Each structure stands twice: as C-alpha cells, then as structure tokens.
Length: 238
Image (cartoon, rainbow, N blue to C red; front, side):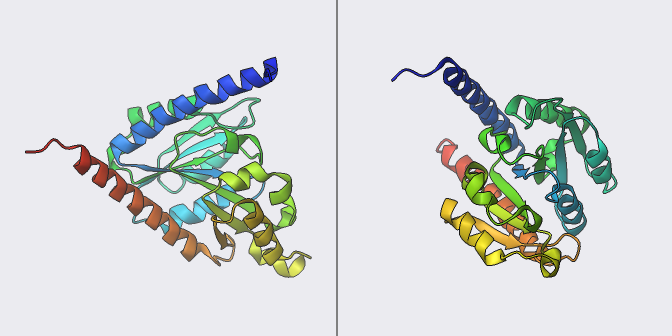
C-alpha cells in the first residue's frame, strides 16, 4: 500500500523532529540536566502547578522553557520565583517542537550556566493532541488532566495518555462540587497506559504535591545515575 502525500509529509516531519529531539537530549545529557515535558489541555493547571513546584523544590536548580502561542503572561508569573525562564511564542502552532526548544536551549546557554542546573521543565502549549506527538528532547513526559475535563478524555485523546510517564489528575479540591468519579478517570487512563504513574493533586490546597515532588526527585536522581553509569562504561581502560 502506498502512503498518501499528506501521510508521507507527516512522517518526514516527525522523523526530522525526532532527530532534533535527540540533539536536544544530547545537550541536556552533556550538562547533566533532567528535562521534563509538561503537557495538558488549556486550563488544566500547568502554570499553577509549576508555581507550586518552583516554590516547593528550592533544593533543586530549575529552569523553565515556557511555550505559549502569543504572550509571555505565564512566563512572567514564573519569573517571580527567581529561576531562568525562556519564553517561546509559537504563533499559530499548537505545540512546541524540537527546533523551537533548541532555540530555547541556545538562549539558556547564552544567558545562564546550564551545568549548574538540575532540571529543565518544558511547559508545552495547551493542547491534548499535538504535543504528545512531537518530542522535544525530554527524559520524561508528564500529562495533566483536570477533573473538570471529564472522565472520558483519556479514551477520546489516547495518544497523550499513552505517551505519559506520569499523570497528574489536577484540581482535586473541586471534587466535592462536581459529579466526577476519580477512580473512573484512573481506570480509563490505565486502559490506555497500564504502567503510568498517577497522582491526584491540588495546586490550590497542596494535596498530593509531596508525592509529585518526590517523583521529580527520583526522576532527577535516576537520570544522574544513568549518566554516571554511562560515563563509567565508556571510559577507556587504564
């Protein structure tokens, strides 16, 4: 069967993006940085979660690459926490791609000292479809799903949830005011991705954030150990 012209173009774009993502990941690995790609639909609470994360993880040196279509409103919110924030406006594009993030990495390298960082969080553009298909060089993908979005979203938008290493069910403080079944949300997610780590959190009340912080610490530690093991394995024998 022959591919359609549009399908062939899409495959070429994804292939080129993957090469760019691998290039970005090489930069992060060389600097000893863990990169997390934070994804969700608009309004799921990515920026508020990041605010609480920057506030709660003062022991880690964190930078943010902030994607938005037109403004720097979210970037300005995060700059108040005294961390490096690189803003990327995507225009009409509904996601960040590896080339855009490469530009952010270049800005980070020019204005800061990347080797002093532990973690870079990429806050992707709000969209439940495209961001999951375009890697940016991350070591882990984190998806957010607000309880206000409905229990069926994992089944209707499976790619995002299939690709996620960690899922945060957000705005749980609203559960008493909504007809929502959190167990059903988790069950629907596990139909798509049985192995994903799931936390129920509220950036407003703070519920569940300790588990989220612990997951970040473990992810950063595991990445550092992986790089150390790789470095030792590739050293020439004395």
